[in-house]
Image (cartoon, rainbow, N blue to C red; front, side):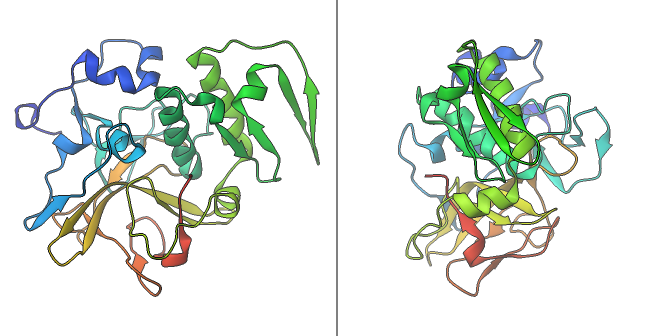
Length: 274
């Protein structure tokens, strides 16, 4: 448990950019921002971010102050290398796993910035599901193939959006993320929102939530993950990380991102949603 007096608390206004909180029952635990929860290491400064950007939005993610322990979708405690837990619902089914957690954050940012109709993700089969089509009544029948049918329009509420995301979580995964998300140019350094994905059944994926840099240009990042089973999205910690939770970030081919829950991720495992 984190000492609550050590960091500033969230206010209701702070949560306006994190729309899932409107669907959750109060009272909420004491919350703070990711930025407030984690000071940068000595000699580092946070990289500048554009107001309203995905990077800036991730930096203000609500972090629970009541626990760092990770719980599964069914409330079962899990042994995870967790430095903090993001205040984000998981659902009551084993759906929102590692790749899905990355999709979830991207989708929630699009909703928060009024761009939900841009949201669309591919199943492992390659079939694209778009929020705009789903709320218009599109249905999927999935067996050995994926068949689309038309139906009655659905609600355009965030609750309905969350139900659509459960469909995505059911049929997308590390393989579809690795295949469909673009690889950033090699001359662009790792930024918040970039993720590293090892495709497979199972595979794994982690997301960079915040980045700091020193005078030599060396970058470190706060790294988040979900995992199997579906569970709290959490910020990783490791004895190999600077100050226990700022992970050295790869900068070129041949470099790796080492995290405590999976094999090291290679430079070419980096992806970016858009």
